[in-house]
Image 1 (cartoon, rainbow, N blue to C red):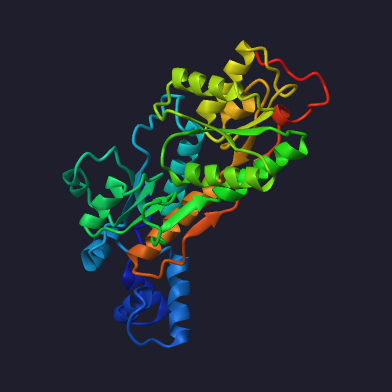
Image 2 (cartoon, rainbow, N blue to C red):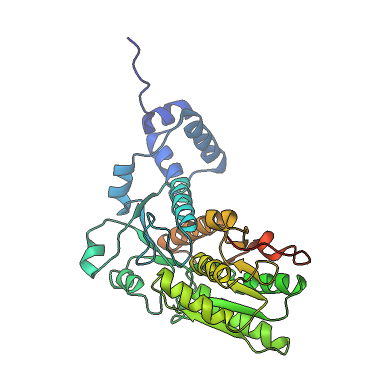
Length: 346
């Protein structure tokens, strides 16, 4: 009967390398005085044998759990398509955080909404990632109260001196979209955003206002209620269409979908009469009629940078931040082909 191979022990590494177990321990834990050649030999043997330190023993020695937490924005339900951003983004961000944490020998725990400090105390974690904080976010405050390291995806606009955050470059992405719309022939470029104090939106709205004024134009900005209801999207979209824009940048997918519906009901052709772009790429953006020009927020890189920054903070490193993630733009039919009759939204 064939038995499974036993997990290599520190004794096995020591015997194969011809050194003491103490020397192996010093090398693997980066302690003690060991010459460079011996360190290299021990490291090579440990890698060849597939040695991994026992996680339970490691935790007892270090006081660490090797577990980090992820908190999505309050109200995000990945079974429901009505989101301030798009379900695709949050799912991709979560899965990439799991992979990035695993690569750093960390487990990732996705926490439910925290109602009080005791909710956070229930979990043994070394640190947390809070997504899309509001000003003075109570979730971030809970981590601070318990002296647990925390980083955010998106910055807390009420903490301007905090360097522990990662975010897509909202200013650059907004400028890129607006320039694209202008190059496509738009002269009355409007913005349909949402009334919530996430840095992603506030930075985009500021960039839009500056872009408009630099061209001698008054900003055409309408803010929807942050309840994510179709009725609120319709109300905001119709208010914006009353301003008679010839192009619209709607950062949230939820509002872009409402805008397409309102345009169809009013007989406004996209892109014939109105160019439409959205601030986050998603399945809905790609399959809308017409397909929507969209910003690629690169959730994979965002996740990797956030996990790296958190591990750095857990290990008492310098912040080396904040970290802005470069973004891309996917031009699609909703902003292309204006010379033709356009596509009637259906």
